[in-house]
Image (tube, one colour):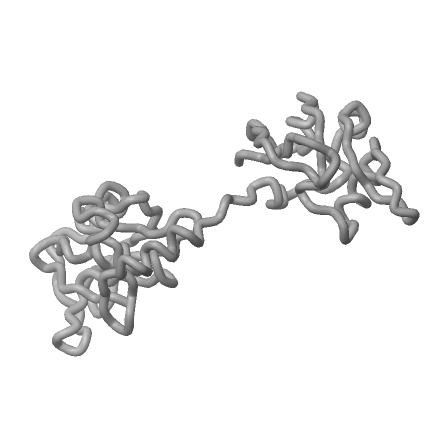
Length: 230
């Protein structure tokens, strides 16, 4: 948690805290609370304007832009601003103060303060970035019954492994799901021929599908792995 008096306006140092919270485990920012006087609540001239400035700062002064939640609450007869800063996912870190650049403007939260990230720490975070796995995320309110069996049948899906080790194609939803649940299944063992009907396989769906080239298991050559860009 970070507490600031903010009686004279939004402190610029909040940018460093936004970066630090985003790069660690998230945190709470309190504006209108004086840490030096045992966290007493102070009077804010315009709490609503202060809240709006904080939200704007999180979007304009930090790269990538943050999505924080902020509200004005009443405590001890005064109104203060409470903001929740969520942690960034690994594929978007590090968050840094745009004006300072990634090397000087990336921070981590340690104890009750913010500290600069070392060059080695920034390099490790960049190396650990992962690709979003949107195609593996469930779509709320849908099930296998929402898939279009005809579309699946008209799409070449292989390979699935039989008990005798033979690789055979499958063209039904049950066969597809069985192959997917097999211990030998992986995205690299799935090859799909694009079918527009797949875009409507779920009631809630959808977003455009994109394909990326990937090397298939030995002997199968190039393949296209279809992923969902949600």
